[in-house]
Length: 503
Image (cartoon, rainbow, N blue to C red; front, side, top):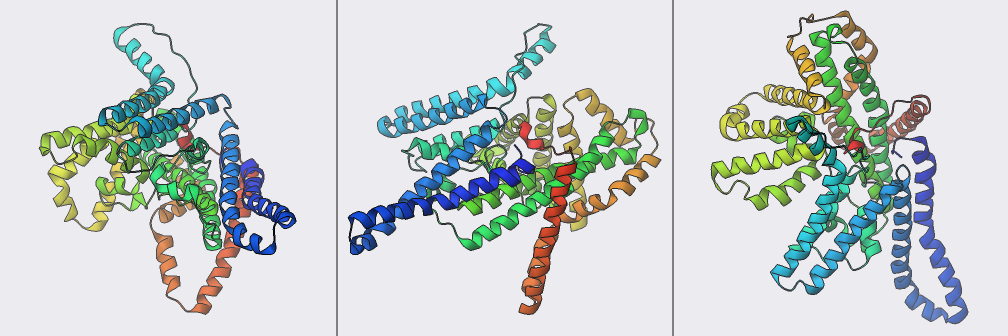
């Protein structure tokens, strides 16, 4: 089940929030009736508030857990058992770490057990066939492939459970004593299958004691709607353009068309993934949680370094805090710094998928980040901002071509097409046709990939109250129109992929 689907928008989500907001009130009313039969009015006044608050939180967590498990089991019920097993392992190791781990050696033993089991599951389901295929290709063997389906979101929830174990070992988070609370943290449906990667430290307090604020619910609805519009009206439409170009025969695509396809995929991936993060963060606000931001207009970057401060922030900071810094970061000389960078970027590429193009993509960025750090970074910073933006976008677009082709032969052909090495024309009639049919959505995507909306919002904030009120009404009308339009697209359009489900 994807967020941008009719069943989720019109059945699952309304039912979830109806119960989530309503159950605590029903429980509170029921207890008040019972209390009225057995206690005086003074006793009810003195004791009801505290009991209702704590019990209401428990009931809300129960509703959230129930719907989260239904959400995950919707498409692949069997893999629900895998997630339950993973959470039980980390919860149990955490309890043992706290109970018996008074010494460093015992604490480390339970940490190693948790990490080993988590990484083994990830390796088995995600990388077993990749490893077998690589061995077969290198040595001419015939190791059979398992053909296992990849559990949805396994890379995301595995990193969440691992972060809990590591932070608990470092004594940076308290032990979670209630397994159902821990399971609720890991399985929360807004961020379960595609992030952002939410660490336990970020939601510990809210998991046990949160407030549902009216203003944040309203902001959450708007944030969710923004993500929905980005996904359905921009990502899906630009994605259709990319699919058309990708399916062209080698001799049909001009150089301009090949570059147009690369730009289209870059925009599709950005709007697709950032839209999911917007919807997750918005639903988090509606539930009383504050998930971390995952994108900060990465295509506005002025360097590769800047791009990775803005793109998939929760993943970048995860690798920084749990791999890069423990290895020594940049504190141990140039040689070890370069080693640490390449280890992190090799793992970053491999995290995205079990194919060599992902490894190549990770190392591509490792090399460029090293060059920015030690070769041309200062010279780049001295150039005009427009040149810096062009440099960053060029690198990102080429990088995402490497990212999208898991067939290395197809990758090579497409790169040759972009470089004009296949004998194709620089410009063809098909490129003009694509621009005529998709030019409007491409232009919208290019504009909205830059921080235009914050700039407009800031300018409106400085206007008079009458203007702000008028703009508010106009914005609400716009949201309604866009929602109806997005719904119409979902009803009539069968092309509604979500790219990061494969990770």
